[in-house]
Length: 193
Image 1 (spheres, one colour):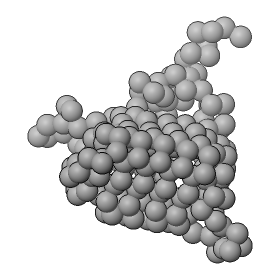
Image 2: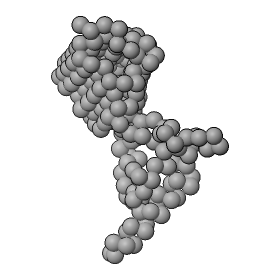
Image 3: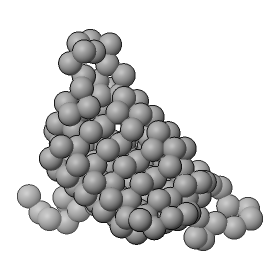
């Protein structure tokens, strides 16, 4: 088959999906093929089912242990080290799990959120429609032994250093150095250990 025809079909697939508001990021998906859409859909459904079990399992709840959740996160595509503990009701960006790295002995307590994408507000101005803004996709890295307090939100592009502690209900928008305590919304370092 001619490569030009394949390219035209890819761009047509993107145009159709953009028109029906399924995707908007041309840089990331501009050359997506119909087969890639189908594969991505099934992959996302698989990740969603695993995520739903980890988030709020009603089936076999006594077996839904913090260590078991880390195994499921690996199956979803996250890079998860050894002895990682993940509390209940922790939300992750299951469509971008490959962007999440969690090193050994990290503790993520209950009700936290890990986001790997957000709208790009850089060019947003009066009269624009926020719905049309593209997305920014950036990785999250949780270094060895850090602890994320209950209800905290980790934003895209953030690295939390080794041994750092994030206070409960913090919104982490910038990197946190190793062996520091950060709290607040937005989180600020209040103490270096």
